[in-house]
Length: 247
Length: 128
Image (cartoon, rainbow over all chains, first blue to last red; front, side):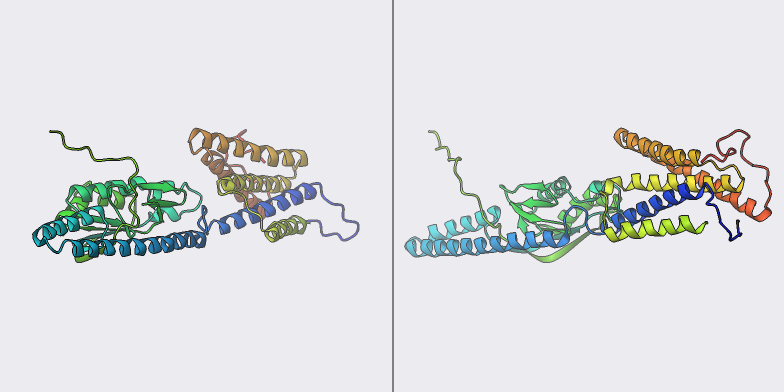
């Protein structure tokens, strides 16, 4: 506009415009930095999470191995002390084996289904509330429930055997199953009639359909042989005592 | 003279960028609204300047009050569970477009072109 060189007087619009532009520049940089940092999972760093899970699973593995050793020793003891009554031993053995499967004390294999579930694709959008798009404890309950109702004989979620004493609950950024931290993606394995189990999960309006509706990546497949891990540590009973049969 | 505000924009950006500070994610929307309100004032101010009726007091108060109003509306909306931040976003966005359009016409024709906005409306008066 004003191209004269001699003693240019500063127009009145320049100082306020300059000040406002300075602020805009600063705020833009602030937003850029904020958005860039938001690229990392906002709640916990991924590395922290993995380290937490690793540490917990390592200590759990040690405990598990010790427990297996003890169980094997017990079994050997029983066999040695009751060789005299073979019939009793066999029926007892059978009973013990079945109970061990029910209680999740041994690793089992058999036909069944494997379902994988991850956080919704919508969860990657920054700025919105991520919560509805993450897999929560209450998302896993109906899956386990349906599998049980469909006659699953052994179930595990991310390697954690689901037994009578199992709790699936939310603990900050992770879930805790059997007190071990687990995080998505989730792999749910169940042993039982594959067709019945798959059907129970994928009926119209069932859990798989509900997850798909919210853009949760779900995969469900039947397999001829699945291995399901034993439960880590079974709680010691402190309060419950059997009631003697009344006469 | 137009260089000075542009230079300030760059300097402000660089300073904050170097400081590497950030705000909690939830407040990002508010920052964006302040930026939008300021950009609206810049567009309105530029237009007023070209039309020869720039008033620095109106300009500065425009920046401050528009920012406060936009953030307040968004804040109340968040408390109410209502997407009220959309209101200033749309209103300011429309005004920026309108003012930028006016500036373009003024620069092209170098003459006052009849406003297409309703007479006496905020848009017609330049509203910055």
